[in-house]
Amino acid sequence: MNDDLNTPVAMGVLFDAVRRANVAVDAGDNQTAASVASAVREMCAAIGLQLDVAKDIDADALAKAVALDAARAAKDFATADKLRAELQALGYLVETTKAGTTLRHN
Image (cartoon, rainbow, N blue to C red; front, side, top):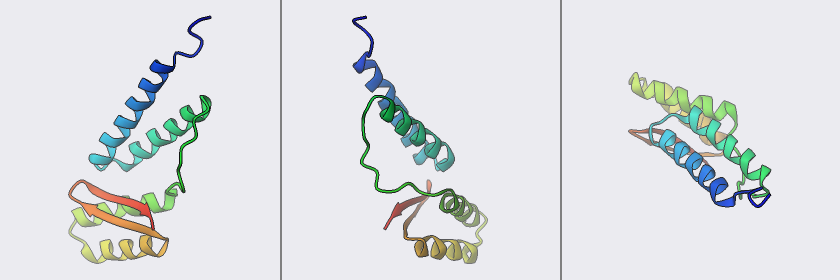
């Protein structure tokens, strides 16, 4: 009964999940990062923590970011530029690095 909610362990699990999401982002694995981020939000909600998240990145934008990375890898810069413009038109700030594309709400 004294250990109903072991807060230090719960926080450790949350921070481990955030670390895994960051590793996925650094590796350009946006799908894994999005999945882990979703799990973190659910865990936070379960223990009553509220995250200050303005907006999630929708699946269509995430798919366009993955396609943008594929186009860049194939050196199809016309398609990459088109996808970047589409993402910007959707209101995203698009940052492209060697590790991949990062989207942020503008």
